[in-house]
Length: 112
Image (cartoon, rainbow, N blue to C red; front, top):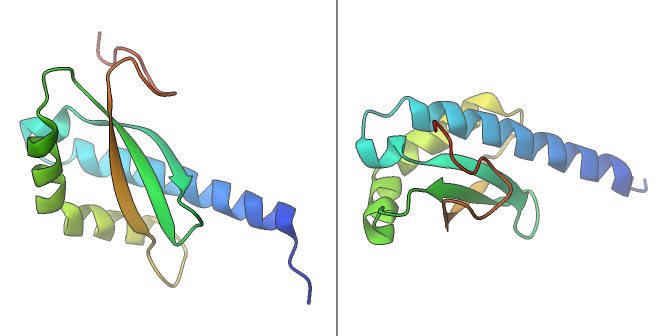
């Protein structure tokens, strides 16, 4: 049976939207000042839906090493939240990319 590339693209877009929403809620629920300063800009396949690139907006004064350390600390919790929000047999691998405020497709000054 042939696969429908249009349908596959729609399912991938739907998955990315679900992951974006789940991560936004999960990040907001973590009582950590560094994590609370993050916001999800975009979620895209990297290179497919088994691995997703999550672009996170960070404040200009955030230390990238500290942000990555905190993301590692909460990785299990974030992955668990994503697993509960999507309808897949396997939870995709999440790869985080930090974007300074003002870059990327998301809000330029959240909370301002």
